[in-house]
Image 1 (spheres, one colour):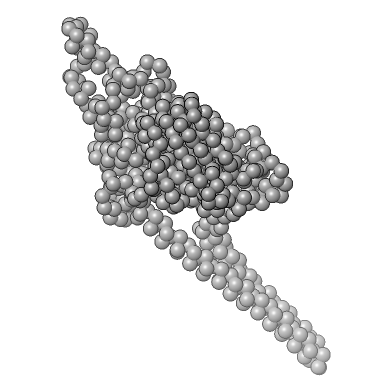
Image 2 (image 1 turned 60 degrees about the horizontal axis):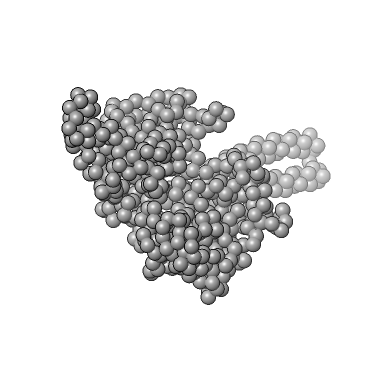
Length: 568
């Protein structure tokens, strides 16, 4: 497995902040001082300014930072509390998870999945094609000619657009109820590309796509004219962008180049922050020592003065010297205390700039599976996707399930969990199973993080639950937060905790596209958690970098007819 999609050529050279600003000098779309909050008053964006210009640019940031909200503000789906958006051309927006019912002007037909809606309807050419068919059948109705206008090659353009994103030869009369989640994402993108907007805004466009489909989409985005801004954490796509905008609570910051150059800048800044922390720590220690030394010296000088007074020095002179010494000690001590306070302030600032101990450390010995232990048996199983599967999993194997979109990868996981029993044959898990679905609908929003874990870790004491959660960075009162109030990253960590801290401990983990929509920190948390997992793992994923990190040992390719085993 390679680290990046083959569609990307050599990494682009780094650009300075000045060069980035220059490239944004003639934007297709600009936004300034955008502020937005939810109706309950929860702040999302505060004074965000930026622009979208020609080329392929990415928008990254932690889950909950407001990336999707920003796109919706730019397209007009949401109204900002402050600031404004200006555009000099047409804008099109494709949200994430269009197949799950997210309504947008770019993909209403796909999102609604209304029976009878066709691929042509999704592409926005259904009416034109119907008029063409009528004319071909001999109609001379002027209304049909008005509908077609000059768009006589609409069918060819539609097929060309579909081919460019990996859907070559798709029947335009096919209904959307027959397409997979990955194909729905591609169709929504094809609809936007066919419209040829000046600005294209995309939210996680490569989610749920298999390898060839993802490469086709990336290639199409790189070749597109106009401006394209894409929210993504897909490293293959990020390897091909011209620039990256990072959205934080403090605002929007631009970086030149692709993911490699972006991460190098962050690594350099982290090294400087660590050096500043070491310097600030040493400075506090130095000021503390100097203050202590002076105070101890002052006390010693006071004792010497008192001894001199007892040895015959006139009281009035001794008293004057004592007062003078006390005033000097107080003044100089105050100077040292001010220096110590300043040093501590510098230390606080340095600590804020460094992510202190945000690494998940999980040791899960109860998940261990002996090398030859039979974990899963799938025998002559006809799955609901029409796939006939035969599969044996033994010991702590780490298996990636591959295959084209709609081939039955998720259906295979569902058969193993028992949620989607095969129509014939059998699919049996012989050990406790933990399942993390694509939607991450693991948590009960009405319960706290502690309560969510406790419901799955039956028999564990409250102390054991909190001790386990601390390893997932929910320390102290953080575990008492309601699941409904968690940020995206916190929600993912809580879901992982529910999965891995369950009793009995899961000796088989089933993960369905686990890195979809994850920010870099959550993705790292998942990899770190799996390092401590000692059971068998089956994962549906097209994230090649992630698969390399977790040490996949075998690949199961789901074809149209059977499950084929091959070396990873």
